[in-house]
Length: 137
Image (tube, rainbow, N blue to C red; front, side, top):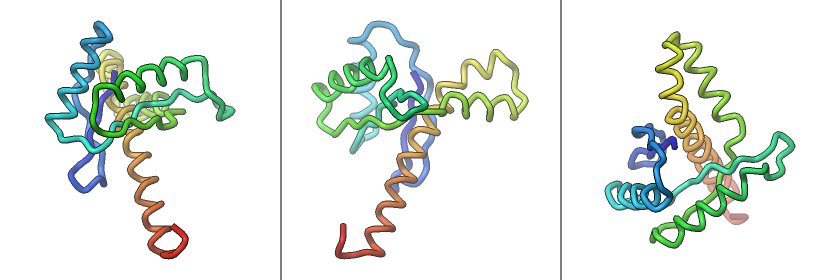
């Protein structure tokens, strides 16, 4: 499972070591520990949408995972469209010239960074739009 956190200003995403999934309870505990360690204000969970924009077969699993996180965390847990993040991560890694073995190990972390960065960029754009239209937001 790829993991990433933002800088303190919420501008850039940085990858964390990839979580090797074990048991669900252990995975949830690990994320709960990260939430405390980094004083997270929000957790973004990848929402696997189909290319059409509709929920994919895996979307239900992601929502169940998010619901379990909500029970454990004191901060909001939000789904975020993860379409194309894995493909983009693999493209970036392939272009970087690293070996297939290293690429495979880094793909989830890079995809998590791309997912979080897209969320941060969206939030910054929304804030800028609201600032420009002061009374409508």
